[in-house]
Image 1 (cartoon, helix red, strand yellow):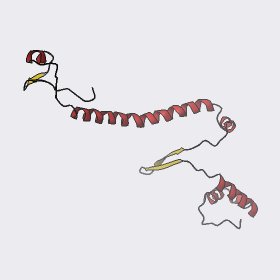
Image 2 (image 1 turned 45 degrees about the horizontal axis):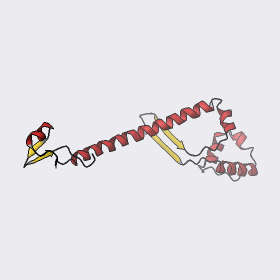
Image 3 (image 1 turned 90 degrees about the vertical axis):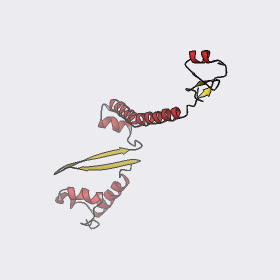
Image 4 (image 1 turned 60 degrees about the vertical axis):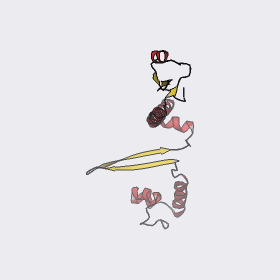
Length: 157
């Protein structure tokens, strides 16, 4: 194990430290180099890699989200989980649920802001075809300055 340094904290060295010392000592230099190469090439790279540690007294817990392109073959996925199709469907439903949980409140907030701005854009306007006070007030509008005014007019009608 000539290429191995005791103070290195790489994933490769962490694996070797978890092995029994007797087994780790049996690797030849060429085996260690090859093992290091394979571990370096197979390191997990995800498009999204979120890791959160939440501390609590005496104990904490962690929360991890990985997302990216699936690189495993369908055969491997089925070998690891015979119910792969069902778990894939559940995963899809969870993803849509998460998307809805994030999107729906945003859309509702935008709609509420839009509704508030629409109320601010309502301006009274004269109704030209109602030319006397009686016919104006019968429709629930207001007669003022010899005009019939509608206070609920909006350019979006």
